[in-house]
Image 1: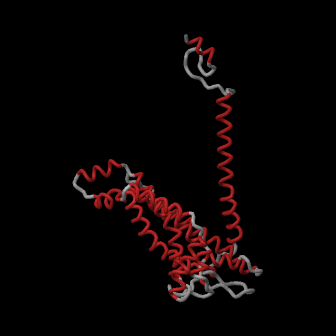
Image 2: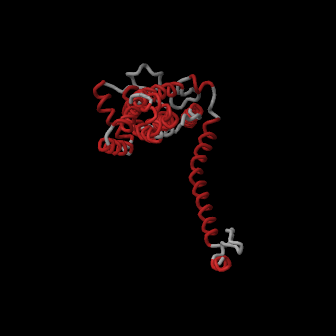
Image 3: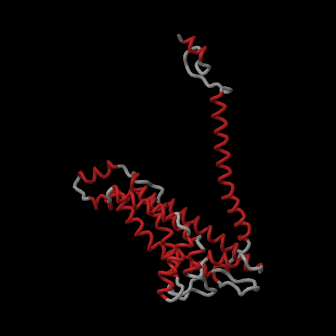
Length: 297
């Protein structure tokens, strides 16, 4: 019986055990798909490393103390820095985070833990639709709601526009993170006498913190690199930020403005600002990974 099986199937040896045939169609197909997957991975990572390399090469030579302490120079003059744009970016992204993170996490908690199936389905659908809205639409929305009513451009309006873009990412990632927490953990908490709110606050949320912070980091990274919403809301300024209710500079708008001028000094500042912006996003991601490397469950 074993001899007849081995004669019919080349993958079965005469002793009845399986063996690997290198030239079989199955092995060749597996090798081809492995090579194809590896090539696809390389093609996916190539643009990322190419952008990082080019930005680093172009912007590294302009890194000095003046870049972080001085204002941008007038057109045609050399020297100066982008300190005001760095501060303005921290202001607008900070305002956006203060708005989007609490509302996004609370909305996701409601979806995952307290909502009915029909309500959760429609809210998730609306969140997916909002995540596909172009950023310039968020800028126009914030312009009509804040700039027109407040009488001018401001960091508050810019932060509100960025918060609209951050909300879908935070809601979706937090919702998925909460659903990953095992249901047995919730039952065990309720079984020892904890209420639903105590279970969510003291058991479920701590277990989902790593994934939640990852989603928050992704949302902050997207907000920090947006330009169109800030042009409509925060505008720009060559000076230090005068307040949260005044026009505020930002790194993304500075890159947009300086990259199109014919002056070499301004273009160098644009490359340096790009490098600083990439480094800020990278540093935020690294810190979030380091802070959440330990998982509860």
